[in-house]
Length: 236
Image (tube, rainbow, N blue to C red; front, side):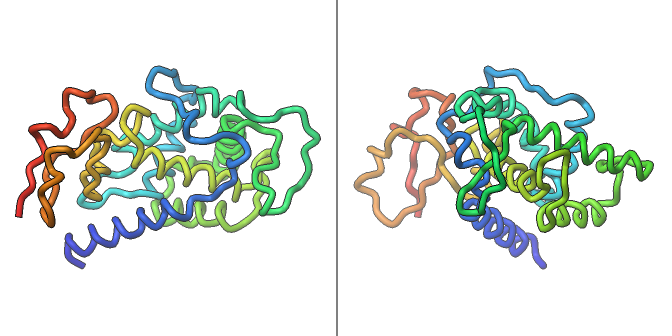
C-alpha cells in the first residue's frame, strides 16, 4: 500500500470514528464544559504509561504522528481534572442500577473515577502476569484492548466496554480538538484532514468560486489578528 493510500485509509477511519464515538458519557456532561490548558492534570506516572501505550494503539503513527505525539494523553488528563471529569455537572445521589444501552451512562463514578479505577485494575492484572501493559508487544496490546471493548470484564466496578468507550471517545477528541484544550499539537490533525480550523470569516474569498482554500489551520488561541483577511489565497 502506498503512502497516499495509507493516508486516505487512515483519514477515512478517523473521520468514521468521529461519527461512531460511543455515547456512554452523554448523561455526565457535554463538550462545552471541557477544560482548557489552564487546568492541571490528575494522572500519576503509572497511569500515564498505560494511556500513552493505549492511545497509540488506537491511533498509531504512520506518515502522521500517533495520538500521544499529538498530546492526546495531556488532553485526557486535563479533561479528567476539570469540572466535567470531576462530575461537577452530573447527578451523584443515586440510586444507581444496571441500565439498558438506550439509557446511557448509569454508573456512580465520575469520568475521572472510571479512568483511574479501570487503569488500576488493568495494572493489577498485568502485574500479576509479571509485566505491564505498556511493555507488551503491540499485537498483544491490540488483542487486550479488543477484549476490553467487546467483553464485559469487571474493572473494579467499571464494565470494560464502558471504559474502552470513554477512552476511545477522548482519544479521538484529543486528536482533533482545538489545541486550546491540550491536544492536537501544532494542529497537525487538522493538517492531516485539510480542516482550516477557527477562521472567523472568509470575507475576502466570497467572490472566488471553485478554488482551494490554501492557508494554515488556525486555532481559537491564535486570535482575531490571524483571521482570513489578507491571508486566504484561493489557488487553482
